[in-house]
Image 1 (cartoon, rainbow over the protein chains, first blue to last red):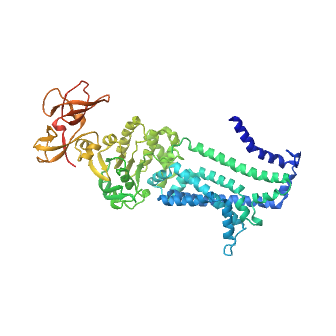
Image 2: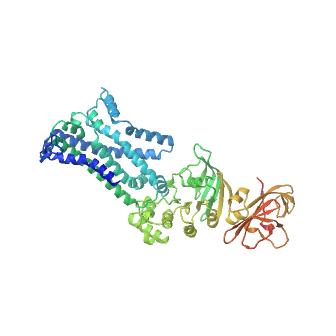
Image 3: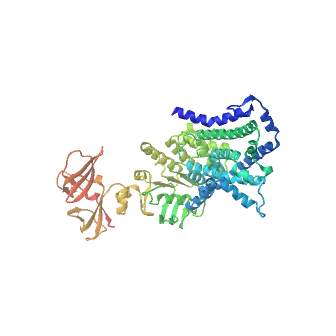
Length: 262
Length: 341
């Protein structure tokens, strides 16, 4: 059992380790490991205008997608949760789950079809990339929030607050929002991680100036191996940071609620 | 009258479940306990009063004022929920201060009042603790303090003790009664525990199938139930079908019982009710003494629960007599005649 785990970890970590090694290797052709040590791949990457642009486009997309997820996801989750009729709830969940079930490629083609028309000629713009990422990530936010609302027993707490004299606005600000803060934060970080690494849809809908980092990254693979490795490591670091932050907020939330009974 | 239901009906959408034609009044300072099986409508009544449900017809008055159309937050009622519904992200003091915050009281004053309220329920040392770190009984007290701190116009208790251990429950009954008496407000107490209802209620309402079957002080409810259903639901009872043979005599299969038959005429079919603890072993012959045989005998510690067969009639009795016996006596004043249904 221990051996299997070890092998699995090696299997997981080996490509990442090789990327790190490759990004600082001088030359790497037909050998197991590269030879020589250099920082020039990172310097080249830093100097490359298309990579710099893509990096900042990605950051902007991630930030906007997170904000939009919170602004749309929270009310949507609340509405799904509060919907009195089971049918409404089910339909809303199905619709919000669809983007997970449908391959990104299909979604991408849909965007291409709809937004290359003369009436909606927005294909290739920055905002179409944001919209695409939003469609892909919103289900995660909504599902995380709806699940948390049920687990927290929010309806009973809201009734209690109402009975104590709290109108809707106060209930939302004093009870719903603080209790959901943890799951909202971790949902945002999941969204960030998804958005940073998203390739399929971005590749189809982004234009030359709105390419995200992973889209430009593909170009790197046609050039020097060291450069490609360095470019990938940058993405990797971003993704790891998001994952780490998710894990940390999850833990903080867990300890805050303590041994809370459902 | 502090709480009043006037011809209130409510049916859950898409079902036939609900309450119908409820007339009920709770006086200032009175504690009315409502008991009923699950699904009988007792919690529906509480939700209607709290404003979580809106009646299909009828009116609900609090302090003589019609609150039927008011939202829950505008009704000024103190509610203790089954699982307390304490806000998990707030301390005990913040929980108790919350209704005061909603009434525009400044932070220092409301926290001070909340701490004072917690001291009154014996939780002075726990004011800054989060609910999750409090025991069930302590959470219960916080919930009680929170429901009363803003001087509500009525108190609603929704199965407040059902989440507690049996041992704790009895102690908390006295606590609730003490606090309710101090606040001196009309209280609606919903419970499925009849002992709790009988020991706490000034009056007890039995609800079955969405209708009030009887409202009476505990003793009257137990000793003079209005119907067979109430007699069967509250406590244990022997319920036999009988017929008035003559004034003062009831025929029961082959038995002939002496009983008070006032209100019935000879020939009437009646339900004969006798509480098992009123029947005992009898040494010799006498009024309503019957010989027979013990069918089953269960040892319960302080008492024995015996099923005694007399001429084909099964008589359930509770007795503290340890010796064997072959005759029982049913005192005439223990016999209640109810309309047959």
